[in-house]
Image 1 (cartoon, rainbow, N blue to C red):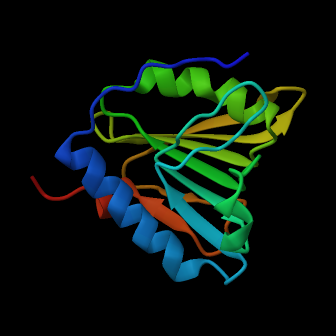
Image 2 (image 1 turned 180 degrees about the vertical axis):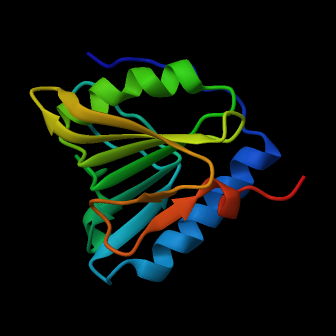
Length: 151
């Protein structure tokens, strides 16, 4: 049985942030890691389509099936914060090593790490001005001040 989640529309800021972080990830990833944007993950009884995820390669693996886990999943929550928080349990169950919820309006990033028994055992909120350093993607870090355009 699959869980169906309603997806809100994507704003220009949402698309901007996803594109920017995808570029940043591609710069630091080794050839055996792949960035996927808006593509499905097949996780037990769910098939979410995270804004970004980093999965093991090679890319050809995913010509016939979706990845079953990821090293890192990132959701940009402009109008989807509660929905994205609900997804934490889905990602933890699939042993996604690290899950970020980027909340530009709050100027924070929530980072969930250390999945165990279907839940993340660590959760931290990183405020604007501080770097979020990935534990699963060496060399990848962001600051909200660096991500957000000067509006």
